[in-house]
Length: 184
Image (spheres, rainbow, N blue to C red):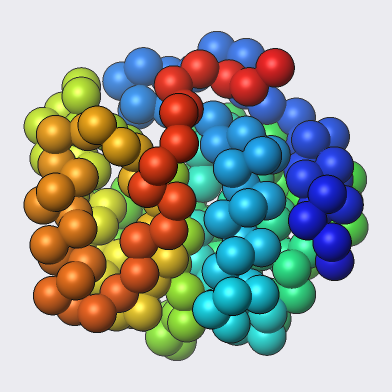
């Protein structure tokens, strides 16, 4: 699939209109999601024919949808809030994607499934609850060391995140972009 085609399909997904501040819901727009998964799939071989998990799939499951469109064998989207999972499910159905949805709290994830090849995520920044971002990162790295991770520049823990990722020989994709409000 071409990058522009991927971005176009993701651009048609429903987005949440009232993000939950306490959950630090920040949408991952089609521009970022398409590039992240396109790069992960074509440059690193971490998506196509792989088992992919999206930790904290947020309001619409954009990253998981991108993974499915890029040819992932199996995709699991995990999120704590059922209303968001309903929207992500509707988006997957609209695109006729085969994605599994799991309602759970990442902090209490006792991963019982088979190993995943790649973890994708747009984690909380940790601005409402200190350490929320690192909980996502540490859980992802426990499940699978080879991870494509999405984090935000200028965030106070990005240097810590980079150190952990380097230590565990994982990959941090798309560190540098501007992203704070929904894309128009």
